[in-house]
Length: 352
Image (cartoon, rainbow, N blue to C red; front, side, top):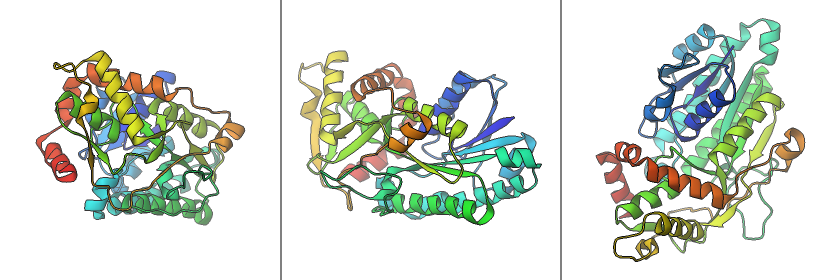
C-alpha cells in the first residue's frame, strides 16, 4: 500500500518524506502546489526512486486527490499542506484561510468519499493524520504550565486562527462521519531545508551576507524548539500506534528565548566561518518593532505522547542547532536558489 503526503515539498513535509523512505520501503505519493515555500529541490535525492512519486497540485483539488487515493490504494494521508508564516498572515490573511481551512475541507471531502468506498478492513485501518501547531493554544505566561492537549484554543494571529479552524474541521469529520482522524500539535521546528523566512535560517542567511539580524521587540519571547528529525519520528509513531480521534502534542523540551537562539547562532558562525574583520556576528543584531499580537511564550507538555506511545525527543537544542547551521553552511547553493528577488523584497518590507 501507499501513503499520501500533502505539502511534501515544504520544510517539514519533505523532511518527513525523506525520513519515511529512509526507514521503510512503503511507497509515498507527494502532493504539493509548489507555492513560494514548496521546493522540489528538497526531494532531489529521490529522483529515480521507484518508491516515490511527486504530483504538483493543490489539496483543494478534490478530483485530483480522489484520483491519487484510488489509483495508489492509499492507506493513510499525512497533511502538512498549509500556509505557515505568522508575519505573512498578518499582512495578508486571506491565503491562509483559503489553504488552511478551505483546502483542508476539500481534502477531507475527497478522503471521506474514498474511505466510504473501501472494503471493511481497509476502511478500519485507514488514517488521516493532520499536522498542526501549538500556536492554536495562544500564549503562556512565564510561569504557566506548558500546553497540554486539554488546553482551550485561543489563537492570536490569523495564521493560528486558520490552523485552529482546520483542527476543528478534522475533529468534526471524525465525530460526524467517523473518519479515522488524528491531530498533532507541534512546537517550533528547525533543521535542514527550512525556507529562510523563519528565524533560524533567516539569521544564518543574513549573518553570512553582512545584513542586520532582525529581532522583534526585546527578543525575550520564548519558544519550545523541536528538531525536525524528532518531529518526523514522532509522526511515524503516531501513524503507527496513535488512536483515531486523539490529539497528541509534540514538543522538543527546549524552551529558549529568541535572543538566546540568535546569540547561539552567532557563536556557531563565529567558530565556523569568522567575519573578515574578526568581530562577532552578534554585532549585526538589530532590534525591530515587535509584530502585532506577538505571543510571548509557547511550551509543549509531551506527557501524553510519551506515556501512551513511548516517544521522546532525542536531539537536544545545542546539538540540533549546530547540525542545522552546518547544513546551511554546506548548502549555500540551495539557499541562493530559494532566496529569489520576490523573497528579498518581502524581507525588506517586513523588517524595514
